[in-house]
Length: 466
Ligand code: MTE
Image: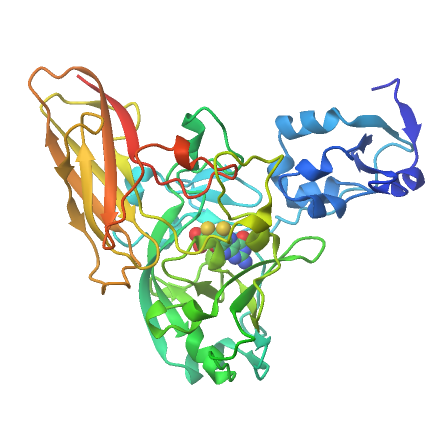
């Protein structure tokens, strides 16, 4: 690197487009990333925010860059050394005020916090204790003063409203819903066992949890703002979070107006989780809870609700949580060609025993969870101890919920006798069926998708019989 030419800041700043070339600096390195821009997993537009200047502050915010693989990749594009040494001191750590978390959580990334509970704890209770509930953050947890907090409601055909927490609690009827939240990336690890790896957090089946959410119906708040759900100009309800990155871009998502306005859809603006105020990681003081729908649409720390003819323009609505054919990869993906994931497919997972466990030779007791999107409650879970040749029906534990409003998971357990003399490796398999009789595909390869979302193949766990 010593032999590389010195380049000054002003020259770097002139390289902000395809025509001039796109340059960035990191520490004292200067990089020409023109060729890489289109391949940036966070989208070209994101990387362009840093064009012509230092990426250090962006990487402080999006710390998934902070590993040898990403740094090694950047190094390939190095063209010089920044004159005058290090760029201006990086800004203070935006993650300095993060809440305390339980050490038992398995942390996938620290900044932003992404963590899942250990599987044996996940199946311990129908309602996941708040401290064990998986955490999926894209940005630092915002600090919000409940006294000055206001929810803004605006958009097509609406009277603009600003509601305090007190307004929400006193002017609207309170509702509680037991609903499972699941990240679209749950079980992503199972894709990595196919021949092709995927890009994303390495969730191992624990980015799913269940709580009793309490608050007010989104529908009631929209009606109070005068929403006419027959208005042809309103097709989507957008949500903006109060968590922002350095370019002041907030987390955002949207759902269809039909789901938002359906009294049986149970979409809440929740201020409580399992009977206590929402913890900071889960959206304090207010979050959207969209039962039956991918977790990414349940916007936490919600600050604004907008009725619109269009979906949220956010990166996460447009270019992230979508699934494609196995033939589509990062070099030929057209994000506009697939709809945003809303309802999720039926899935299940074996939580006990875990991969590699040693089990006794007379019988094996298997435990797990099953869940389906769109309010399709689980009606059956089948478990096999011979890789799917013969099946045993598991016993289900669930909260009673109406047909079409089965928002909560089922926990299940099956005790399977093993044939005399069974020794050595054994493959345990499970699959669930929901009330629409949807069931799971046998393997992950045919549903492989570049972003590794919606993995719902039969769950397989290899153990050893002793
Ligand atoms: N809302 C905001 N404002 N910011 C976020 O990063 N993450 C989303 C969603 N809502 C997110 C958000 C995603 S991808 C998921 S899966 C769920 O929140 C996770 O909710 P939890 O952390 O309470 O489990």
